[in-house]
Length: 180
Length: 312
Image (cartoon, rainbow over all chains, first blue to last red; front, side):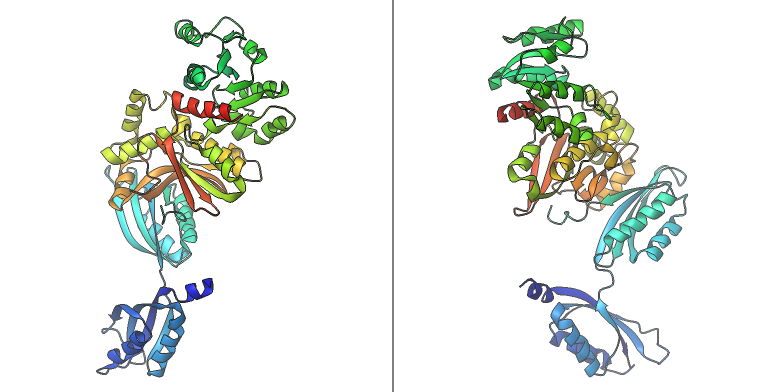
């Protein structure tokens, strides 16, 4: 029973396609999505960039029941669409942390790139408060987008860089928060 | 029941004052320098008046309270760390006399839990310590009623002083030092608030929870503890802009004991304000249980002590 429930659960996916630059190509690529019960979230059509093979890369965010996703991808391929990457949405969860201390003096941009490089996360939003100027104790709020199920590791990476730079981390209380 | 009350601070005083209302009689009351003992019941009001005037409840030596006639020893001396003395010795004396012990002192339960249980096994008396976690909130008795095996984890806000400071900082946009000074003026924070703001007090309570819930012994040394001292006001502002706030959260669970400032939803269950405490119990079959109320104070803690006496 529980397996049925989880496989029919709707999940977010990102599909990367390469389209031939011809009229109607995008529309025919999107049809199999709707036919498989998918819900389009966004279409990022990189018109300016062309792949070495002369195709146009398109990134499609969609939601669909988990048990329909494989059929959706094979229908796309059957329709002649070149599917480059298909899988669960890369960043499925968000985690917010506070950093307190000499946030700015300790090379804030290095802190951010360390987190992005060492954790499977991207910095979605940053808010800084340094009322005493850059050399005083400042605070930063980071919203990090992480792959589903990896927020613990992401927080671990934040702790690692914070320890190196003598910053305090105020971590979120995660696992029981949602139903609070 | 006849009660011997050790400690005449806010909690010991209140226990002595309220005992009669709960149908009990105080036969001994001691502070660090003196005691008053009477097998027929002491005059609580005059002993406390004596303490106010003379700085001690009576002329007798404090040890005489331990040797007095009583059914229950109420241990309400200040919490000490490490060997948890002299509180632990008081508990030992009472159990060796086959008397019951009710603790408000966290030291013996947090630092020497296995020793405490061993003494209890060899005694006709039993040990209870509801007052050591969450003041008036019935946390430990709820765990006992449900069965510790059916509760997987506990967490919450367990220090009223730290919570007062954090909630005032967030509400008024004031700095840590300012709010702490205000808390001291209001009597919410003690002159030396370090146990509260550095997380020790909350950690001791979580260690006690872990001892009760788990199958191994914990002490303060096993806990990961971070306090709220020097947290800048702008950190709380940033949290607030995002619908969150910061609370000193203690956790006791399968992963051990951890206390530290954490981001929680601003309007969430754990974001209690002022000196209020809250404990969440994660039950195996009944979801989450939220218990909240006053976590400190003389009459509040005495209420938990006397509830324990009534359970004996």
